[in-house]
Length: 315
Image 1 (cartoon, one colour):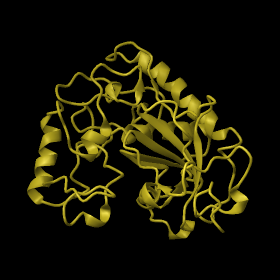
Image 2: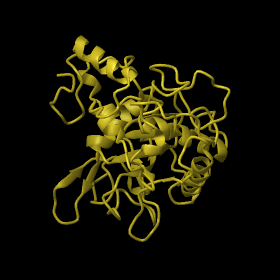
Image 3: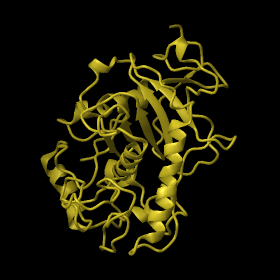
């Protein structure tokens, strides 16, 4: 279809519907925030979750669950915390409609491998003030979270920068299951589960005990990842994406994407970076938390590069 200035290149004219937005709307502030997309493959049926309230209902329930779980956490500070979501100036959640340029069958079995580079550079937005296209959803102060209306190998998959819940995966058979998946994947989108957290399987990002009913398995409560008091190890309660913001916040982009560990000097973190630097190339199995979704996977044999960058982070 011809590009008409307000939808991304791969969206079709029939995708244009009242109340639908094809680009990230102007932000209320420049704080860290989680932006939501309703995302389809090129040939996916549009079930209008961005318009009919289905997404909004689940997203708002994410924060209701967070408020309760954070206040109840025995090692936390007793404060209710919620996520910083991206809102429009009119006070509504900012949800963008995104249609990919590949049919469902063409997508990688782990679809985020196609989704992340698409969001980063292929999606085209037109600035209102001139005719230059503005490329991509790639603000390092945002997590781009997708409700993808197709299935994938997993119910959801996330790393720093990008997370996705696959609405047609068989594990997401109800609103509650979708909620559990979003709560779970948001941990990975914020770098967790970090190997230094008590009970986390080293380098795997999940609890050794899968029977506990918490967000990083499947549930509403928060486990040790939220607060644990282990020296030099990140706690979710300090994530820049939670409000009220911690006095000592961590930015998962700095840790997991740039390897700027700062005060997070736990050996289970530092030795991973040392091992990768010694090898001189990236190995996705060698990690201390979730991986960075802005990584340029095509250059893994040369080092560790982010999309759109020529800087080798292992140098």
